[in-house]
Length: 250
Picture (tube, rainbow, N blue to C red):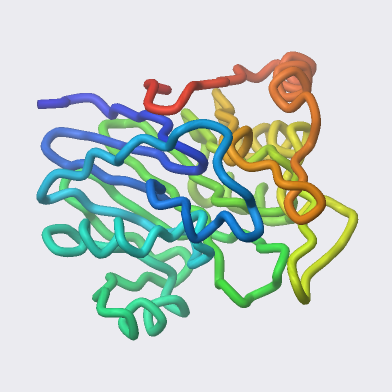
């Protein structure tokens, strides 16, 4: 039994957090076929997600690279699925009964406390994105989905910080989707991810949401991500975690 908070980075934006007999997944992903038409095939195999009976999950938003319907449905059979309240109806429509939470509303999942906080999606409020704060055993982690830079970092830090680890998206993707196209990043760049973690008061910043999909001209990620991320962290005096899929962060 894990008596301290254990955190692993999974594929793409996936994170696993364990404490005692509680296992929690945030944005787990294993079914990538629905992403291929725009994001292209993954650049490496995506391993199956270990989600035994009793596993719980949180979803930052309902875009298919963060909400793997088949996997979430499997987890929902024996565990809870947490979401932002505005996303609950869409989940119910496809047979998943979620536990809905408003911004700032905390709940307990076994030995963990989880709270949704502000996030900002490049497509506005079509997905009602949130970040998740997870606390347990004296440790605190934030998972920032695929947010853009926003002005709520300092308020999140005041209300919920400081954080042992901030998971931040860093691919700074240029996205040309039908109806949504712009030549500026739709998610945070490596430098913005580091700045967000600094504002949050995080001791460690862990890069996620990069390196798996690159499909120009529809989905184009930034160059030299890991080098830029490390350089930005060094300049700001924060510990950079560049972690392979499945490997521990805490």
